[in-house]
Image (cartoon, rainbow, N blue to C red; front, top):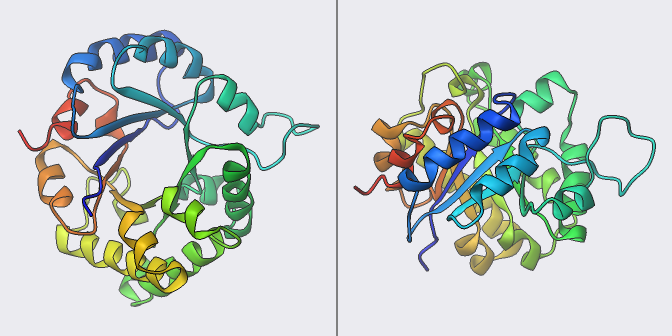
Length: 250
């Protein structure tokens, strides 16, 4: 089956609410597409302004994180119900920056995955290796562990709705990009793992993205690969020419 391409932006800690609204207004024309799903995951404080700005367009707004509890004494955290009430459908989980700077583990990512499906959010679960791990030849061992623990307890129906984003840590914000063949090799390995865990149907339906210095100049080559179903895009999603990635076929 043909999986629909997803062009997802990860804004990280960039743009104020007013800047977010202005950027999205400028993106409405450039990101228009009938064939590609367009998503911008923005800082939590930007969500209301971003949702309002994107209204009436094909641009969906997502979040960059969620907590695994419904409510309570968790200062600074954001619950699934809060995101849903704000109009959010997708949320990024387990980004390498969250793992490195905020001590997220495979186990906390799994707890968040389970919470997303309990509440009706769609998680974009990130995985990826360091340069040292790649050089040591343990890339797939490491990523298989991230995915297996992250998906622990998910049913096949839940798994096929999830999105996995493969982001080699050495290519995030560095200007370095895995070659399309390197990216495809790992994305195929992830799909093969999902096939082991859930069978052919789930493996053929789940969307696997590549992230790590995706830009207009390399999007078409990456997205043409059989097991790459779009991109999780950082810096290049902060400008209206993100539309060049969305409309990579042109």
